[in-house]
Length: 115
Image 1 (cartoon, helix red, strand yellow):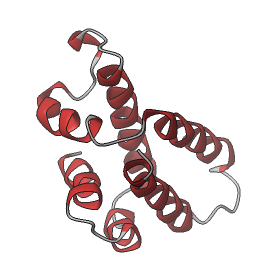
Image 2 (cartoon, rainbow, N blue to C red):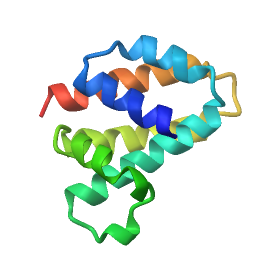
Image 3 (cartoon, one colour):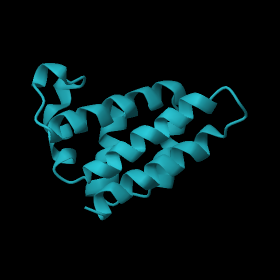
């Protein structure tokens, strides 16, 4: 989880390549990676709408999530959540998980670029 959060930050703050980050994250269990990506997205939405902190999933990474929340376009975050729903819908088929993760992280980067 710490690696996922730091890699998401590196895409936004350090302008790291989403494809390179995806290849590193793909070495982990893709199911677990996608779960934590979804949890982080929900935390970003909660922060944007000032939902009580007790609803946050990653409370121990509050400052990191806040940093991301300040830099991202919330409407595009909702699009990413919908993308993750598609991942879960098709994950048992012959889906290329690495390509899915690469596409997802490219869109993650766009969430910052289109603010």
